[in-house]
Length: 121
Length: 292
Image (tube, chains in turn cyan, purple):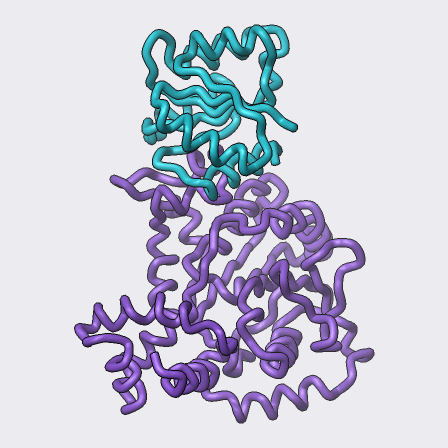
């Protein structure tokens, strides 16, 4: 079973994402900010990260830059999932090593299309 | 909706558009036509059907449009586009290296996602296709969806289904809540209204025809007739791409499945094809009621 780390400061969003991803056969871990997500990754790298942008303590962008510098940190597929839906943000995310980008609001169809796009399903 | 009204609609839709609704699709009719009745200021579905029965041309056209507008998304099913890039285009590029031109037809273009997906694939191969003339034609029975195709405007939801984010950033511009495909891609496609049940010999010859996820709505005879007419619009060494749930097998001798790529078909050599297909096409063209 593939693993997915869901990083979002909203527990409601984490719950929705968890339900969708469990339906796609992922084993889920959750983190409420970038720093906690990095802790999870230091312990064990997931196959996928569903990543919010704006969060307290450490945002998704900083998390991604840190993750990509970790040993083996280039392996997890990172899919942003954020309300930041302008081209400038998307371009920045891709440049920092994001694999895909979901603009909120999202649903099961979008998550599965994007995960399929990067070869996770 | 009374069973009699449903039967009337089934017959009406089959005659006008070839749509072959099974006996249990009342919910589909209701979900598409109740909003239309409301928009037309009618009391409900019964009154709408009454108007169609009494011959209202405008409403009849709208009923056909509402029922034949089908779901589509960018790079639908993904595989046909991988085939196109890995098999169809390389082979056609080689075959047309002297002529340096390609004609591609999307026979059920719907709201444009498929022709634009093809345009993006072509654009991504522009290094190999420099100096080539690439013609992409998109047709659909519905004027409404053709207008949407031409505008190239899509919602945030639509651009997130099947379209890789890199291609969104590269080829689309954000306009408020919507995303619009680049003018250079819009200019690559010619849109025309076309009912597949009518004669379309005027379309000319194509190297590649996409006719995906539309034949599933037609009955066997209609499919056979359409394949016969498509074969006449096809270069002998061309490719036909069908939807995942569609096939030519048992319906026509004009095409044969590609040896190892599912969903891809090639015309049979004209000499080997029996003459019954053109004959059936002629008979079919007479009985089919052209919508336009």
